[in-house]
Amino acid sequence: MPYPPVGPVHPPLGSESPFTSIRWPEEIIRVRAPRRKFRHRWWVHILLFLLTLLFTTAVGALHYHSFISEFGRRQVPLTLGSLVDGLWYSLTLLGILGAHEFGHYYFCRRYNIDASLPYFLPAPLPLTGTLGAVIRIRDPFPNRTILFDIGVGGPIAGFLVLVPALFLGMAMSEVVPMPTGQSVFYLGEPLLFQWVAALNFGTLSDKVTINIHPMVFAAWFGMLATALNLLPFGQLDGGHITYATLKRWSTPISLATVGVAIAMTYNSSSWTFMTVMMVLMLVLLGPRHPRVIWEEEAMPASRYVIAVLALVIFIICFTPVPIDTLMDS
Image (tube, rainbow, N blue to C red; front, top):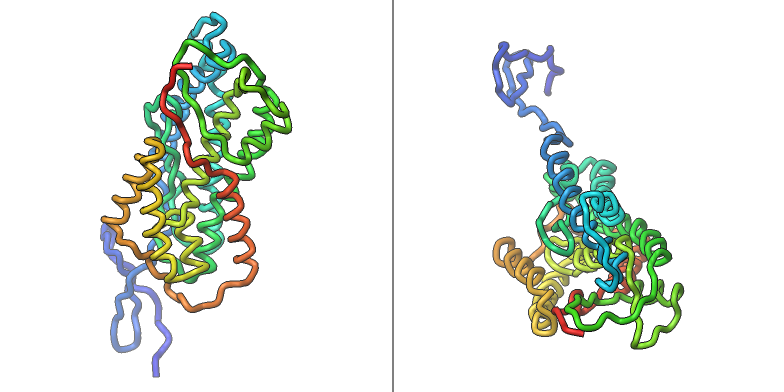
């Protein structure tokens, strides 16, 4: 029969042993001390956020300059003061990305699953200024319900922020003549974008187009990021949701998703980066989603309803051709 411990034996000062000693009547048992959870390298998170804010604000200034110049039809000087106008884009985008990642983080804290704060990813890209944001989850998932909640929490939180941003930005947009005699980017229009545009401007002729406010472009990028994250592949958010709801059927679905993505690159080169990332994940991590600890534990029916909601969000945010190549109009 075990005896209650007499008391802890403290290690000598300066010892960095990860063990805690407990004295029993006839022996000493050394037990590994539990790892502290939710420890953050604050300076890394803050530095990456500030760099992302800088890059996205610079890109946002260019977006705003294009907006007020009506695709270059009006001569408008670009100055350092334009960086202030770039905040329309940067703050909106960081709000959407931040909401997405903190949606994951909230459920990690709720279920005591160790995770990092969001790492924002600055990148000197001409259209976005960032590659998005990620969090690092350090603990295994106990069951499918917890996996589902953490996976779906991010896309839904980001969606709840991007929708009002899209409506507000579209209200500040305007209809202008179709640009001619210059090279322009053509953005794919998800269903949600089309619906909000139709509510504001109705049916447009071929001779005009919508000059979108930078806030709309931030919402558009948020829709793109949401749709890509909801792809039913691997350890993306959509992969978590698929595994939680369909269990081992997620593996063939994941492989099929990679096949479709490869085919999509022939339709639009803008799929190339995402496809390469998925292929690398497939090679490095394998096709199967990591199993949760108690895989056979039942998941509440309410989660399947939310899964359908996530599917709807994916459909209305998805566009088969995100960015078309430069064309002379």
